[in-house]
Length: 400
Image 1 (cartoon, helix red, strand yellow):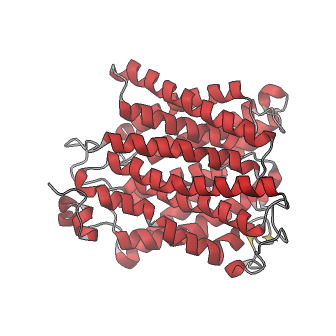
Image 2: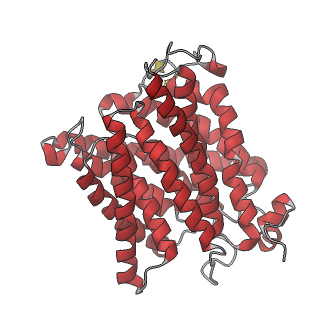
């Protein structure tokens, strides 16, 4: 056990935990005021729900003994054998419990990301059932494939901090949710204007802050790789912000505060799979490209006619995809990509993209259909008109 590494990852785990409340504010500010609490609740509740599922069964499915490269065994069920020492820890420099809870914070925020796609129209009960099933049948297998000794990691796919495990998986699930649940009442006929952009900017700032734990912590040690990931994360976010504002200015004529917040998150998403594998200059190119690509991604929903309320598909789905491909192009730290003489790595990255999107979309579609059959996914038209704050929680975000 290494005391410095342990201290560092304890702090990083706390930073990743803080990202989920930050995401709640980021999303809630973009919702209408009658749905502000409902939107916050969809993210905040994951801190309770997913944490328990992860401790009981999610962790062992993700990091238990490998079964055919597909899923982990039940040897860590209910944290059996997961203790305060390094015994059986996938990171032999960290207490096993610390590795478990650091990974658990990633699990918490991932289904919270999906909620932006169906904001303002999903039943709270249905959300809880779907998210529980999704962690077990989608997130845990994906985590095992990439980080837990499964086939994708063995194949050589590079995903430093969650391009596939977190962002592509949530983006694919978000697309499935948009198609299964349908559009908001009045979508395409009237404007859905964000009710509190300062709240969204605050949320984006918290996400940027927490992302240092997300990416630098994925080095699992207080070392040079962590320092590199910290720097590339910041520069990727900065470049993403500027890339989005450039595209927005050229397309719409003005740079907006919502664009700045969205661009920063797009840059963070894009650099996540590459953070520990690329140089700072490459991170700027990846983040800048992410900002432009994700801005284009949000325009797709008007072309393809799906209602992704808060742009999960455009930012997390496409941003994570670009980041995974860019890793295959620019990797030069501990691994080599196409531009450094290893074209095979780009092909492996493309394989991982196709498999991640295919599995996560199909499984999410199936789970959504199951939940819809059991209890219905969508609130009534009357509840949607009133707003989820009152209809689902008997509260109001603001008292005038």
